[in-house]
Image (tube, rainbow, N blue to C red):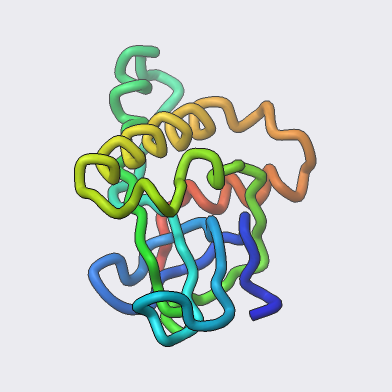
Length: 144
């Protein structure tokens, strides 16, 4: 798939995480190993941050900014690519060899949680305006 590349924000259409936003980490255009279809590795937000107002204390803002990530292999036909791109480099954090065991997968999720929360709290420090809009879109709740 030429449209679905790493860094692209997608919406998951099928399965447990249907309706959730995710970022493409890596794509496989052809079958590899046990999967006989084009698929991609995605990392997304299972439970997003809650609403924050200006009157809230810094401690409360930090507590309400917590989120729960997920990492998953998904068929390319089960994701909907959006026009947004995010500049988070997740290839180093989410390594395919680490997803084989459950213990390593938990460690990857913890690292992802740290990256997502750090980016959410520091959205102003994004380099280009296009990637800032993508980052802002990624952290907003999907309304439908």
